[in-house]
Length: 426
RNA sequence: GGAGAGGUGUCCGAGUGGCCGAAGGAGCACGCUUGGAAAGCGUGUGUGUCGCAAGGCACCGAGGGUUCGAAUCCCUCCCUCUCCGCCA
Image (tube, rainbow, N blue to C red; front, side, top):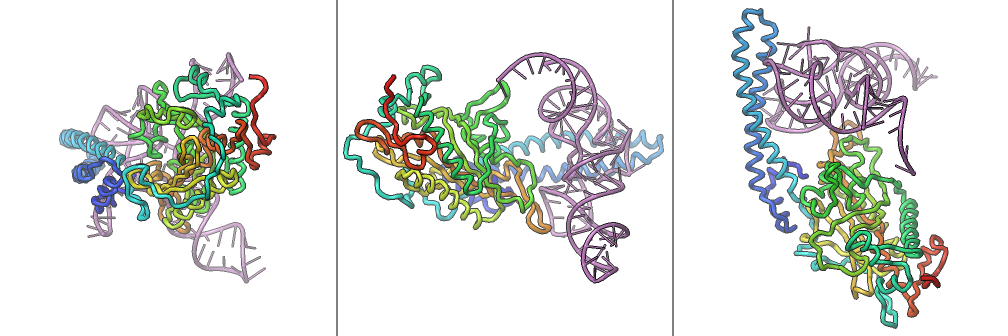
């Protein structure tokens, strides 16, 4: 959500933001509807003020005088109701349009059509030379008996899977390592709802627009989240926090559900694009301070790349271009991790900052130090780790010629072993 | 799932048709007082929106309705609490 007052004064900036983000929005239509609405609202309020004043006077009249005045009041009331309903229709229209407005991208976001035009800004170094023909994580997983896609599909349909034994343990290990890693950095672990109300989806900017990507439980008017960002960011919706409470730095580990509608034929093999996965997510709620927000964004990116360094996985960081930016995102850095079977990097993390886009929708504010007016917070989020996507990188980058997979040192305490081998019994 | 009781400002709590945007208290802020502090006293203390301002309008869980007029009456929904049932 954008500040409508600001939009009124800067419609061309918003329209340009939409163009750069490749989002269809008619800012002019909104401005017109808003102007109409406000004119009508002024009229309604004037009428209401009149009616209120005369009603008040009416209470003090003698009974016989009152009878006469009542008729006039009734008529005015009728007129007011008519106007009020027109005003309501317009108000809804304005709100509907306003929910679609894009947040303008930051200055240093590169212009571009889609993810192919994202700019690499950092690279962790060289990609390992295996010296033999690498297997895909699907082949490795099957050989080791730790990934079972066919049976996952039997149970739950396409894009589903089972992790068995060391596969499941490797997942738990990497999740637990991530939690510990973030705890050291002062993040509070939260266990959040993953089945949430519409308000949380709208508040974080996923709705309207993202309904196709979400599993809806319509009977209960609830929705499965695609990320715990939705819940973490919504925790204080409607509240006015104290400045001294900020920033709130939290993580959640949760299952994530995505329909992946419109991706038929894309990444159909393996664990890359699946309907259900686990993610450790970091969310920060902070003060309305652009400079701070930028710094925190970098820090959050650093928490994730530090973890990748700990896992010794090759990755690069890209500055996501305008066309690949979401409606509410001001700036986004993706971490892409090297996946030998793809012969390239695959997105594993996404660090976004939203300015006050989500806060406005969530009505999430804080009272600045001193006696200032409440301000909308700034919100940011980033992946810490997502599984099974990270497993692809782990299995493929740490594979040995014999099909076994080494466990990175950082994970060994959690796995209790330094190597995953085919089990004797299959 | 069944029965009952409730949801008022930062908090507690009063308020059953006009004098209520809302008593009283606590808290908080500022001032006085003090060697300093506590106590005491005084003043102030919601949000949004429109307006240069004066001021207007909206908000007493949410949404509808009755009424000239609703925190107060009616309906629907949500949430909380108590008891019963069921259950990981």
